[in-house]
Image (cartoon, rainbow, N blue to C red):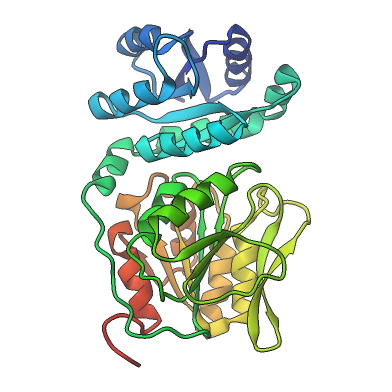
Length: 350
């Protein structure tokens, strides 16, 4: 079996050593080299041709973002960012995902050695996902300005639920940006650690005509608004309070190893909204969301999966298509229009 070849770039000798220990302990991957800064990394990339690069955000001689931008322009390859969990670094990490990084790992604030070793399985999973990713595809999808679509009318009964994982932050942006301010309500579960949701929400709110919020328990779900599940904290469900849709946050154990879980959101939409819901599963590794999307389809909802060609990782959408949960595979560039047409809100009245 061919091993995934990894190059680790970090100015901390301890982090380089720990990443080598974690990656070397996996049977399907190996560290081919480590580098203390991007200038050394540049030469090692030419020498070793790694499958995946792990890249620190803050480094001497050249900032991680500057290096990433040049790398994705000149030699696109799968990159996993390694970031300390600070407000500034969460914003920088989201910018890295925009530039083409596949995913990110957060360094623990305290107990770096024990903390990173606790993350061993997660780090390995992210590297495996990155090895399957298509960095060239990301560049192709990002090209061109997005035109804003028009909605013929809005209804409080229809709503959209979206689930995503690896590559999802940029896929979500591509879905939301073209949607007009009076679009149906949207609830989103994106696999994301605690501390990053706030920056992601602020970024989306500045780019989109719809109003984007970090979801709060009991919050009313209204047209023209987007609700993002708090990363790493709670599952988000759709519930009813009288005639109104509301957000319900559930502080329970992870489902499918994730909290928030896409399946939890989708199952609640199937039960509460039935045929008034539209389910969308976007890029991501694993199976989370497939069974919930199937429950939505069986309840009469319209269901869509991002197509393979536009996915960063075609895992979650593939699983949904394999079990018949998604009625159609849709290119990312067409997803916004497909959603509006599904609720009868695009170009004509129903």
